[in-house]
Amino acid sequence: MINLPIEFENRMKSLLGDEFEDYIKALAEPPVKGFRVNTDKISLEEFEKINIFGSEKIPYVENGFYLEYEKVGNHPYHHAGMIYVQEPAAMAPAECLPINPDWKILDMCAAPGGKSTQLKNKLSKNGVLVSNEIISSRCKILAGNIERLGLKNTVTTCMDTARLAKTFPKTFDMIMVDAPCSGEGMFRKEEIALSEWSAENVEKCAVRQAEILENAVCCLKDGGYIVYATCTFSLEENEMQIDDFLQKHPDFEIIPVSEKVQKNTADGIFFDGCKCKNMNFARRCYPHKTKGEGQFMAVLHNKNEAYPDFVSAKKKEKTDKIVTDFLDDTLNDYSMDDLQIYNGNPVFFTSDFEITKGTAFSCGVTIGEIKKNYIQPHHQFFMAMGKSFKRQINLSSDSAEIKKYLHGEEISADIENGWAAVLVDGCTVGGVKVVNGVAKNHYPKGLRTVF
Image 1 (cartoon, rainbow, N blue to C red):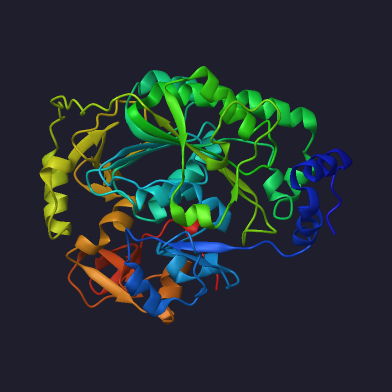
Image 2 (spheres, rainbow, N blue to C red):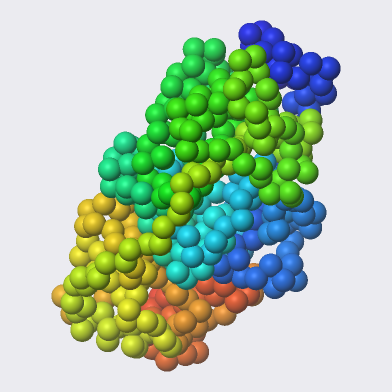
C-alpha cells in the first residue's frame, strides 16, 4: 500500500468525493504499461502479424497496445525502432486533435520523446516536428529515441521556452505543452514523484507552467492549437491554469477533444470561481477509471484567422562531391532537394523549413561525418534510410546472427563490399561495412546488449 501525504489525501478526497476509495484501491494495483507501433517504420497491419508484446488495444490510440512482455528493451524489434514503450494515459494528449499531416508541430517539453514520436507518426514527408528539451542530458535521450525510430524531418533543440519564443515566432500549427508538473498521477509508477510532493511544489509548478504557456503563444500561428497536458491531478496545475490562461487570452478558446479520447476520460472540473463555461471539455485520466496512470489534457484554439505560410527561398551550402558519391554508392534513390549541410555535416531535411546554424541539437537525418576523403556514416542514417540501401542483410528476430550483431560482433554477409543496412524482419536495426564476406559491426557501443 502506498503511503500518501495527508495533505494530498485531503485534496484528492475533495476532488473525487465518493470515488476516493476506488482511487486508493487502484493505487495498490501494478502500474499499467503500453507500447505504440512506430508506423514510420512498419505498418500496423504488418506489425500485428509478428506482434508478441501484447494484443489488447488501447481504445483511443489506433497503433497502441497494452504491454504484456518482460524486458522488451532487449528485443530486436525494440532495437529496430518498431515500437515505443509508453504509459497508456500519456498517449491520450496526442490523440486529442486531428493532425494535418503537413503541419509544423512543436513539442516544447519533449524528453524522453513519447508524445513527440507519436505526433511524428501522424505527419507526412512535408510535415516538420521540432522537439525541445531544456536539460542537455535529457535532450540526448530524446534525440536517441528519435534516432532509434528512424524518424525524418525532425529537429531537436535544447533551450528554455523563452528562447524558443524568440527563435520561432508564429511558426507552428500545433504546439504540445506537456508541462513539467508535480507528478501526482505517477505516484504508483514513480516513487520519486511521491517523495518530492508538497503543496509548495504544486504552486511552483503552476507558476512555471503559466510561463511556458505564454511562450507557447508566441510560437503559435494564428488559427493554431495548443495541447496542454500534465500528469498531475491538482486544480492549480490543470483547470485553474486553463481558466487563467483563457482570461488573459480572449483570442483563445477551449475546444472538445476527439470522440475516442472523450469516451475514455473524465470531464474537467468546474471549481469555485471558474469563469470558463466549457471546462468540461478538458479531460482527466484516473487510474480507477482509465487503464493507465493519471493525466490531464486540454486543447486551446487560437480563434484568429489562419494565414498561409510564406516560404522564402532557402540558400543551400554546396554539397561536397564526396557526399553525393557516397550516397550514389549506398542508396537506391534519394532527393537532392532534401540534401542539406547543417553545422558542417550532411543531412537529409525538408527544404522549406529553415533552421539557423547552431540552433538545433540535431537537424534532420545526419548522413555522416565528412572525413578527408570519405564519409563515416552515422547510426541515424542507417536507421532512417536503411530500406533504401543497395546492400541489405535481413535477419530473423530469433536468429543467432541478430544476437551477435546486437552484441557488437561481426557477422557473415554474402553481398558485395561496401556499407550495408542490417534489418530484422524487414526493419532497419543498424549498419555494417562489408569486406570480403565479413560484415564489420557498426552498431553503437552504447546500444549493444547481452542476451
